Length: 78
Image (cartoon, rainbow, N blue to C red):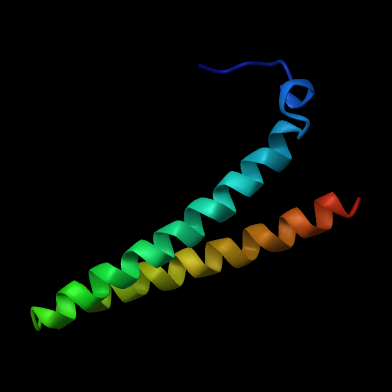
């Protein structure tokens, strides 16, 4: 469901800022989750799957860093 109404009045945080906060949290959470998946794959000696999860983890970290940068600049008025 999409809305053209800004909900920042309800949450106190404009949608675009909230969405960036959510995105950063999701990326960081995913990076943490993938760490245990990497360990599981390593215990099973499945390097192919472990490598896949490492790449996904690196992408999640990169997404979090990009999101944090955007959020930082926008919350600072830039």
